[in-house]
Length: 81
Image (cartoon, rainbow, N blue to C red; front, side, top):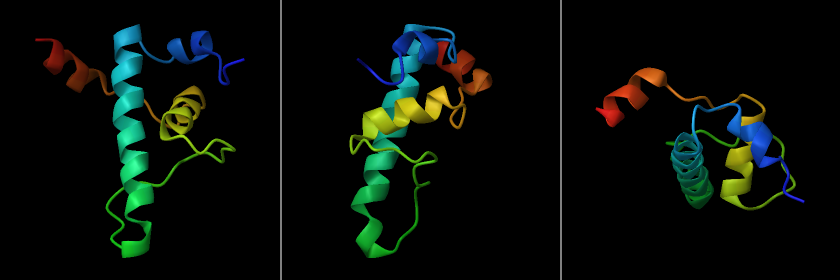
């Protein structure tokens, strides 16, 4: 079973495409954060939830489900135009 359920996470965005884009962007940020940990740069925001998963995409979906990451509607409208 997928945790969190995709249907519940989908309610946080206005479309499946929006969910995919948001989750992918956040997963890349989380991955970059883990890659630069030893360098002490601090250029990325650490994961906002405590997760047992070690996969950046799973952590990103958990963040979206808990409302820690949201879609900026203004940017989304600009990208669609």
